[in-house]
Image (cartoon, rainbow, N blue to C red):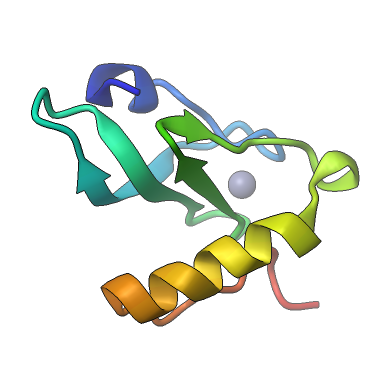
Length: 87
Ligand SMILES: [Zn+2]
């Protein structure tokens, strides 16, 4: 997904701006892998194969998303892999 498009995305929970952490880009500067973080509610949304995985809480598949974060933790040294805010 193109950077300009990603910059327009908002958190599905509170519609706030998201902070982008780019992990992998292609040669045309499209983001292939990355993490979008909402600094308001502390939710994280992974970008996988160029597609941001952004669902409301009830529709999120944390059991599928979490292994991606754990993989990135190993590959990219991501330290904070918590997808949802701690209760
Ligand atoms: Zn949010």
